[in-house]
Image (cartoon, rainbow, N blue to C red; front, side, top):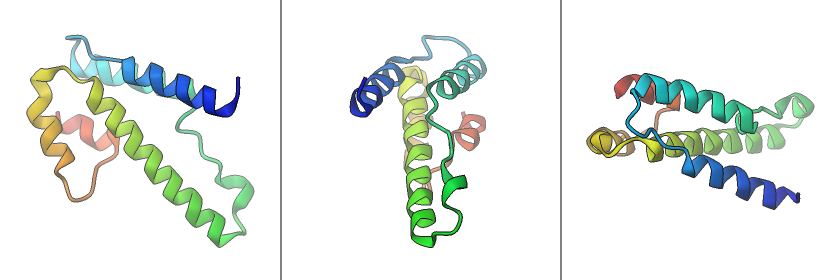
Length: 104
């Protein structure tokens, strides 16, 4: 599979991942296992420690990945959490999933 095809497939799988009325604790735990299985949260900084520009770029990419993880997590929540989801998205600095989960 091409890189673009793989990314598309992973995103399709993630966006179809839903809470489906399970407990938020169970949904969060399953979500974390699912994300680890996709390799989305793997860091690539070890090969580039000497290049400031590359490090800065990777930091931005990691931030975007964290935001994507948050959006995927929030997207999968049941509608009963609509208010909490909206409040989270209105925060000046978006939290990482690990910080958003306790808010719910």
